[in-house]
Amino acid sequence: MNYQNTLDFARQQDNIDPLKHFRQRFFIPLVDGKESIYFNGNSLGLQPKTTAQYIQQELDDWARYGGEGHFHAKNPWVSYHEIFPQQLSKIVGALPEEVVVMNQLTVNLHLLMATFYQPTKDRYKILCEAKAFPSDQYALESQVRFHGYRPEDAIIEVAPREGENIIRTEDILQQIEQHKDSLALVLFGGVNYYSGQVFDIAGITAAAHAAGIYAGFDLAHATGNIALELHNWEVDFASWCSYKYLNSGPGGVSGVFIHERHITNRSLPRFAGWWGHRKELRFLMDKGFDPIPTAEGWQLSNAPILLMAAHKASLDIFDEAGMQDLVAKSKKMSGYLHFVLNEINRHLSRKVVEVITPGKEAERGCQVSLLMLEKGKEVFNALMKAGVIADWREPNVIRIAPVPLYNRFEDVWQFGKIIEEVLGNKK
Ligand SMILES: *Cc1c(COP(=O)(O)O)cnc(C)c1O
Image (cartoon, rainbow, N blue to C red):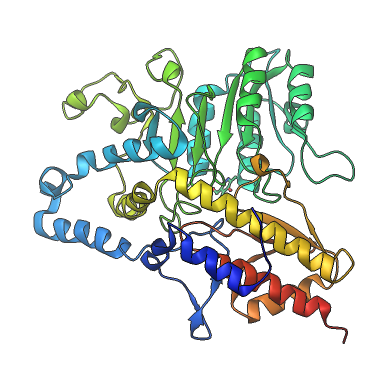
């Protein structure tokens, strides 16, 4: 692709973008009365204009039917969540029976570890990425403590090498091999929230399986962002939240993947609840847990319908746009962003911006993390003042995620222009 760092070029790309109409389906936050350049979709995705309608439908049916809405609402609540596996399986590359929507992400990581982290005297360690999202670190720490181990001993973190920003796949695979006799589980991210690095999910899973252990993934920053093939990659389990790239609202419901080979295995331990019990028997209220033979067998509680309505509003948009086209646009737009940032360094004849996200297309999604080598905070403040909504992380890192559903090439061009103006200013 031959990119140009001009407004004309950016607008032309927006004009020929087959997904351009989707932007109008979202509320774009205003800054000083004008549409912001919203680059925070990796943190909280924007609200579809249809979300209120979907929620209102359920409020109306609740008003109209009361408890009878479980069976007589337009979308009966007992089975409301059953539409999600169809939609999400296309987004994460799974069979529908491998997917369920329930709870929140950290809760699900614990539930999945109840099943897939079964430490023994010799094999009790968990291998994960260094600088994982804090909630994941706390979940792992508390799990190993719960089983009577010490985190310092039981958690192995794979870090970037000295002077590097991203974790080398060869180092992850080597550590799995090195610790294979003491490991019980590999639990990695799909995309690191800080660097934006996409991990080799298939490779890590294969290495874990070669070591005789399970491989699970936290896909909070991967789902709805990069192309996933969880079933074919043989991933044992995964979970993600719906409020980042999946635009389903603050605190939205989480999704879970459990591979086909595990879903009917009744000997796997799990924490059970009535919503995981066989549907045809659920209302008999009998003793003895009899799990649904799909990922739904891990559900505990009846479904939070209002959150699920918000999720449905968003997933209907994903269905319409299609993950393949979204990923294609995302790659093109993030390629453009990398180009624009390089141009800044070139124009100013010195390196002012260092991209810490991997440059290789296969190793990144929408998100790009920039290490600002000059006037970091000043640049960030100028961006905010100009209506760019981005994320600042100490020390001197700006994270942005141009997402294919509602961002434009023009947004990317504007972003570069503001940075160059601040740094090119001699004053
Ligand atoms: C966003 C995020 C979370 C948040 O967890 P919740 O339980 O949904 O609050 C956890 N882990 C990762 C990697 C995340 O990116």
